[in-house]
Length: 184
Image (cartoon, rainbow, N blue to C red; front, side):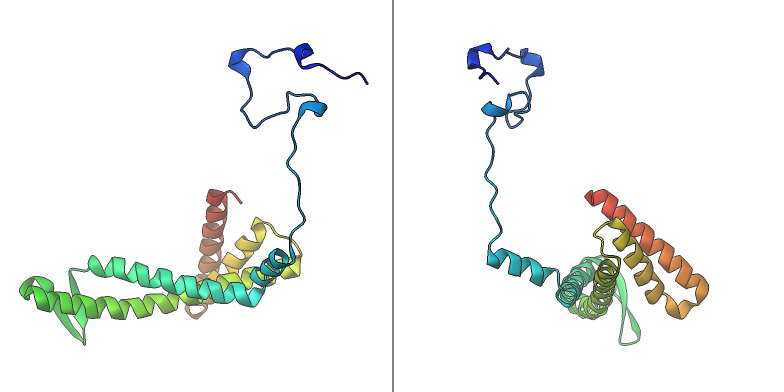
């Protein structure tokens, strides 16, 4: 095979130049390649640690709890009236100091409730997804759909069979939509 000189390579028109990183227009001898490196022992250990079902479940519970607290703080700031200690509180009929104190109490109680709920949902989803992935032996979007169905069904179990079916379908659809949105 004869070598090709740089002057012998025809120039492409300016309008059809490929991006700077694309070298597919160059002959194989003129392309630059990035050297592949094997992962280090630390990288392999870190990946194994993060792929552990227990670790993923605990991390999802912690992050879910944090999201629950943030959601409760956000919702607490939008509350115009609340029930604290069994009595309804109207913030417009209080002094500013009383209103802030009652809003803080309301937000704190909502934070605990939302944090527990989001943590349980995150742990349930991550744990079931990990178990399903281990069982199926595949890493694809169907795992999250099955895990969403499982999570929805378990969370709705006290409502009866109809609620279980609706919970399964809605969580599975939400999981599929999130996977599609994130491009997985």
